[in-house]
Image (cartoon, rainbow, N blue to C red):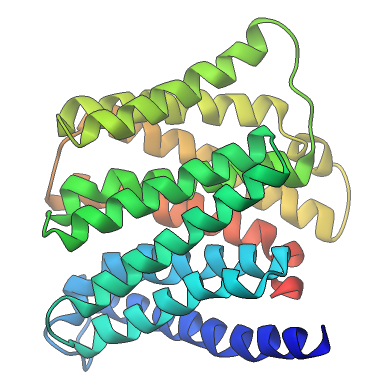
Length: 295
């Protein structure tokens, strides 16, 4: 048991270090992409999106799940993702980076299925669906699909994972009647939109946006963050971050409804960054007091 704990500890810090490095490189590439004169490779600005989403967020989420579960083999997923990220940045040919990152998402799916066998509840199901969305997006990326055609699946990875973890951490109960079904209606629109986006991008994006707006309003009304805002210290900080993130989720949903299917330009940037920066990073900061001590 002691040897297994040492192995998990040894694996944790290198993978976490790669995750932090990936975040720095993704931000560096993003700044270069918007016009800052920074020393970068010619490919780094184009790698910004995959590094931030499938690299940093993929490593962070899969590593957090592996540590929380304590299963040694669960570290294979984040380890492969980390190695794939390094390969991707280094420009190793034959698509080794995307392949390893895809294998890393396979690891998260397997981990989620094993957890589902032990705990059959909705938080685990949503986290598992998020892992499947990540795997689907990575697989299409590996096959050569343009980023704008598959980015909705990467969004599904983030949103479904956060929803599952909010259910898991908050342990709030569903309100009765129509208010319960409004959550499932929003979630259903989101999931159906993710599937549809691979067949008809514009229609899928519109439906995803509708689902995001409904889920955002539901969370603002029923999540426990509403009550934590009246407290002090760490609880208030977490609640503020979460509520701000829920608002950004709703704003992003509106943009997905209004601009669904756009592939370039300022509207495309707004659609993505309201979700991946406004929502996702608000969730990261909000959960940091809980997750980072574990990491």
